[in-house]
Image 1: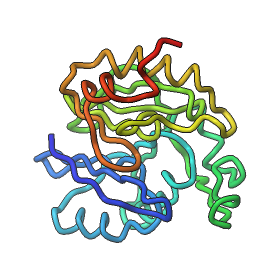
Image 2 (image 1 turned 180 degrees about the vertical axis):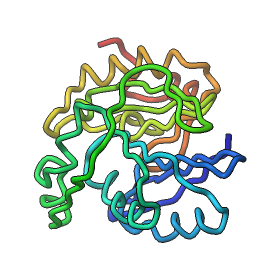
Image 3 (image 1 turned 90 degrees about the horizontal axis):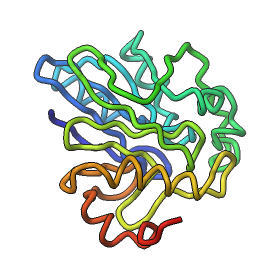
Length: 209
């Protein structure tokens, strides 16, 4: 499994393209300004079979229309807990933070915990509420795309609507820190890290809640 990171949007979101040798790919969290992503897909003859959203905040969804305008019909997946964010610029934060009424009103499919198969891909969806009610991470082998759940040395903020610090930490301890130590964590912002590093050094995870 190969993946490539692109930094997109006003809050420098990590947008990931997970590619398969059969020229299929999955896009994770496209923010605005996805021109480089689209150019890469075109150059590599990659056709997205899905767009996966780790959660519904504006900075992780504002590239949806850009991608679908080029790759028409690409299905979008989000957890039911965050589905309403897509059509509400107050909930997704776009109007409050960047002054844009961003909405995505096309049909979406819903994510749930467990194994998922899409085209050539098989991966695990980990529902991890706490940053938002519908926050998810996606585990592809030894690589986990974890959105704003956990970062290198930090965790997602929980002071926004739907946030719950105890729930977030509990989910991380139960579903992230129990992964193999060498599992690579690819967060929604900043550099990547590993389960082992965060278990040892992340100050938010050193005490039981």
